[in-house]
Structure formats: C-alpha cells, structure tokens
Length: 376
Ligand SMILES: C[S@@+](CC[C@H](N)C(=O)[O-])C[C@H]1O[C@@H](n2cnc3c(N)ncnc32)[C@H](O)[C@@H]1O
Image 1 (cartoon, protein in one colour):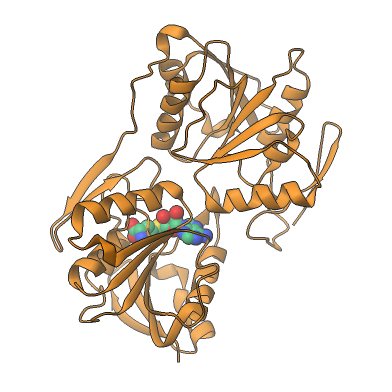
Image 2: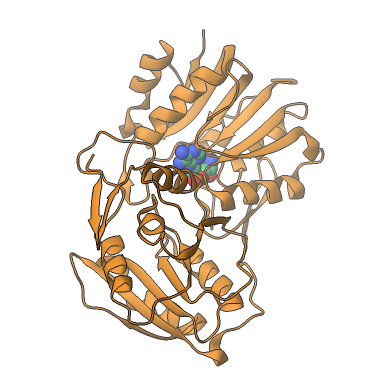
C-alpha cells in the first residue's frame, strides 16, 4: 500500500484501516488532494472547519493546522483519524463527533466528502442547514462521476447557490454559498420504514443504513434459517445494519441475549430504535459501535449471525468478511456457531473451512447460501 501522501507543504504518512497490503489501495484519493490544494490557496483563510465523511484522515491530517471538527458515521474512519494524527505527530485542536451529534456554532468552512447514499447526503445537508450561517462556505468533493445534476440540485435545495470546479485527476469540487432564505432550521432526520410478517417486525432505518427501503434478499433467506430453540444463549448480530437478523433471533428465541454490532453509528442507532419498537424485553439486547468484534472477550459467545459486507466504501473487498470470520472464531465459545449468509459466488465456504476446519451448508437458493461453522 502506498502510504506517502504529499500535499501542499506536507509529507504525510497515511494508513488505511484496516491496513492493507494491496498496492492499489491508499488512504486518500484525488478529491482529497484537490480540496486541500484549493484551501491552501484561499486568500481568506477559515478559522474553524467542519469536515464531514473524511475516509481515513487525509483531510483531518491535511487541515490539522486549523481548528477542526470531524464528523463521520464510521467507527473505522474514527479510528483511522486518531491513528493517522498520532502517526504524523500532528498537534491539532481536533474534535470528533458522530453522525447524530450536531455542532452548535457555525463553522467558517464545511468540507463535505460526498457519502455513498443520497439519503445520507440529504441528512447531512439538513443537519448543516440547521447550523451554518450564510457566511459559511461549503465545499463538496468527490469523484467527478459521482457528482450528478441531482447531487448539485440537493445542495441548491437545502443550502443555496451551487457551482462546480473543473475536473482534475477525475475529481471535482462543489462550491456552495448558503442563502439565508433556503436554510430551513426545522427539518429533522428522515426515517424510512418497512415491515416483514414472519416474524412480525416493523423496521425503521436512519439515513445511510443498509437495506433502507426493503429487506435484503440475502437477509430474507437468513431469516428463514435463524437459529431456534437456543434457550438462554448469547447471540451477536455482527454487521447488524438495522438489526433485522438479531431482531428475528430475539423474536424467535424469547430467552436469548442479543447484541447488535456495526461499524456504522446510524446502523447501531437504527437497531436500538427497532429493539425498542419490536422487542418486549429490550433489556435482553445490547448495542456495540465497533470494528467487527474488536475487544470482545475470547470464548464468550454462543451464536454469531452475519450477513457480511463485500465492499468498503467504493472498493469491492473480502477483507472485512475475513476479519469478521476470524473475530467470530476468537469470540465464540467451544461448541459455539457462526451462521452466515452469502452470495454463492463469494466462496465463503473456503474461508470458513480454513478458519474453523469445518463448514456445513444449512440452506441455499439460486443466489445465496447459508453456511455454518462450529468452533471446536
Ligand atoms: C450486508 S450489510 C448487512 C446488514 C444487516 N445485517 C442485514 O442483513 O440487513 C453489512 C453490514 O456490515 C456493516 N459493516 C461493514 N464493515 C464493518 C465492520 N468492519 N465491522 C462491523 N460492521 C461492519 C455495514 O455497516 C452493514 O451494516
């Protein structure tokens, strides 16, 4: 992995999280470089900057000489900011806030890296409308292909006058100057809802959470194969999203203790909301914002259920699935079981066989397979 990021007068050493040996992966992109060079050239320098959705800390480190607040939904991003700031010996008056925590004073400059989903972009623009002043400058950044007319229309609708830069190394910047008459201070987070019948669950989704508008088809097969008659067992819904798998496990096993874990803050908060709305004894459930199963005690859990992600940001990768399966092996009790759903072509059985030395097919359909591995 290339770790040397040269920008303006800085030579930064930046790591992706988790660290990768893939030479094609690095912790920054050309949009990060573009915006940092642009800010360096501003005649009127900002005092304080709000950075939203920085991926691994390239922006946080590149702007460390300012008074910065970094907001992100991702636990992994948060870890990367701390790590990369320390690694580069940057003394910064840096503050981290999660996705539902709003700043209270209007920043001079907002640097917003476009999130993956439009629902998250709308959430972030409405949050900004609540806090920024017409004097705040907002700069968006992304790969040019991800900046569509509809993206610019959202900046116009929620904030104000919007233009774009020329493309440079396939990235572009969005320049937005808020207008007082557009900054609606009364908008709140939009929650999307859907339900399933078996078991009966009504699911609420905060913006940006996986399967925002309907049940994922892989998750559907997993729900048909949720472990049953497990008594007082402990269960972790690993990569819980809105928590639909863990909710099904809790609904079908009224004595089980269920932990919902995800690296997305909005996902964990959606799962918490859904437990409150669906589970009669919510004290059986707890919640963890975490990278896979980091710091969970060895040999401590009976069941882990999981619908693993197969990409990180825009990169298709199996390293998170690997990390999840390895963490599951470490955390499961002897005799404990990992049950997963995966697209057939992903070949998860090879990984499970290698880590657990066993793997059984529990169910399958044309597209998905449910696999199970027992820690012996
Ligand atoms: C395919 S979705 C499954 C969501 C939900 N379980 C379902 O079936 O609808 C994968 C989930 O894994 C989460 N995730 C990705 N990387 C993670 C990591 N390193 N640690 C924990 N969760 C992670 C994502 O945020 C996402 O919610």
